[in-house]
Image (spheres, rainbow, N blue to C red):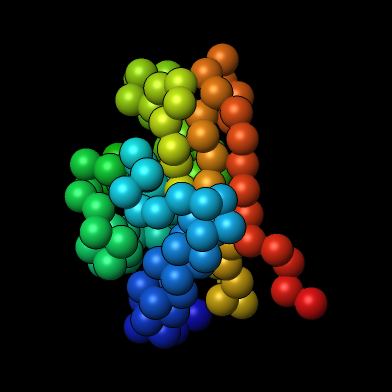
Length: 127
């Protein structure tokens, strides 16, 4: 994959799809406690956060510790955030993943505690 193209794609499509998922959930970026992105590289996470008007404190990340762990990056980062107590019951988390073939997806989750999401919303599948 061409790194520059992935960067351009991720920094344009990820904020768009998060906003779309937020709209479908009846929420705005002001409702987000955290975003959890595929841990591809820190620059993508910084740009996405900035485009959404969020601080890096709101970005759940572990790339600095583990690097890009591919498909496991989001569940690993979420597990660490839950176990550490960072993510708490009622927190709204915007998840967004992107990867091979320049595919992407997002969902909005209100964390329900007990290690389970309370509610989730995602954009409808394209026809």
